[in-house]
Image 1 (cartoon, rainbow, N blue to C red):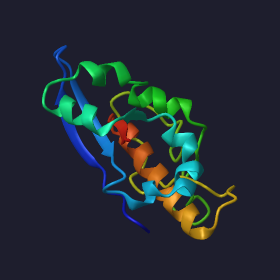
Image 2 (cartoon, rainbow, N blue to C red; image 1 turned 180 degrees about the vertical axis):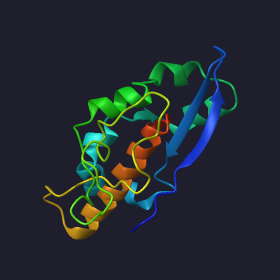
Image 3 (tube, rainbow, N blue to C red; image 1 turned 90 degrees about the vertical axis):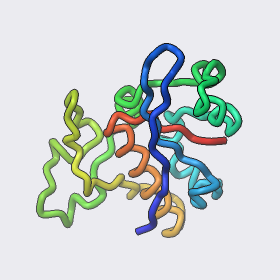
Image 4 (tube, rainbow, N blue to C red; image 1 turned 135 degrees about the vertical axis):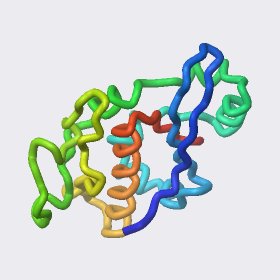
Length: 155
């Protein structure tokens, strides 16, 4: 399986809030440079906050006015907006539990979605490489949301 190297950090907003960010940057994630992977993952990526690189850099340095205008749905809301996704390993996993191994398993303050969970992409029109990259990318974003992180796409 491929690895997705997103960067996780906290931004202190001028409102006094702390925002937990999981940054998905095409410069660090080559799969995000492939339009087919982006299209195959659009059901999840469309719910991420899209931020231009310069605006993100400004926000990291305390200049968050433009960044705050771009903020979208909070992590749990984004998770609920995506279509229900089961684990792709449900047919071979001895620990599979239909009530826990789905994106609808949400409990406040709990990270019940198992760490081994992978997004199901069984209904795809793309080749195996694109499908695998999409699965890995979608899984990383959903796990970020599940941990309460705002998934930010740099563009």
